[in-house]
Length: 288
Image (cartoon, rainbow, N blue to C red; front, side, top):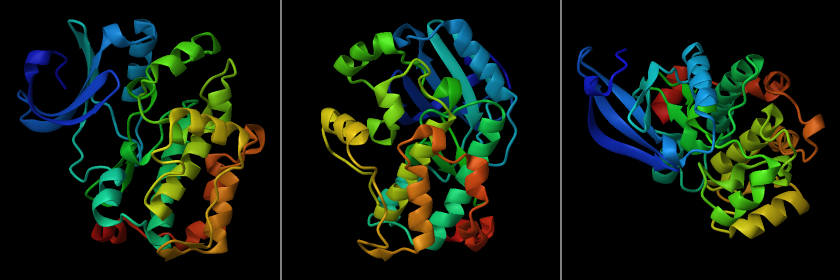
């Protein structure tokens, strides 16, 4: 893919968040539709060299459940990230329009398996997503779920302990704090890690089941206090419009373990017997 801005015609804006905007665009030399994410460099707190290194890492990733990065380059004060355009939209879109009260268990399990496969691949390559949520899970027309907005394209600001107070006062997020693990909010020097992705995955499971995240529409302060000091959220077998198996409730509880050190890995979660009930991509494509 070409690495100059004049090779792309920005057609329509499809997303905005933090210091970035996502566009549907036309790659003129190749005559193909792509998604282009434009990141304003002057608004970032991350060293540019680190950003470019992470973008190069993303270009090397190849997995059916991870959105590929075609290329990246800098034009003026803007970082351009060129990716495939996924016409199915995000899980967040589908939840809002088709499943406002939450999804049935078979759908949740099938989606969850794809998400875990993508996470397992990233974690095996010593990468953490750092911003896992339904907004960042895209639906391929073949019935695959793709992890998007990870690494350099997601949590561009690596928040360390010294900048946490500034982060709190600014309250400007790439994403939302509802998905953040307790240890991320407590801000050890390590910041985001792979175990925090598993917590976020557990919150996504709750979101798919209920149609909304825990503490939705609550203040930032309440989210922090409840996540750090309160009990972990859980899925009840009889939750609103749907009824769920003990197996799914247990899966959510394993992910939302407040002790990060004993939280299971993506590989361990994929061995859960519940995923024997997951369906294939054709089945998923018909239902989303």
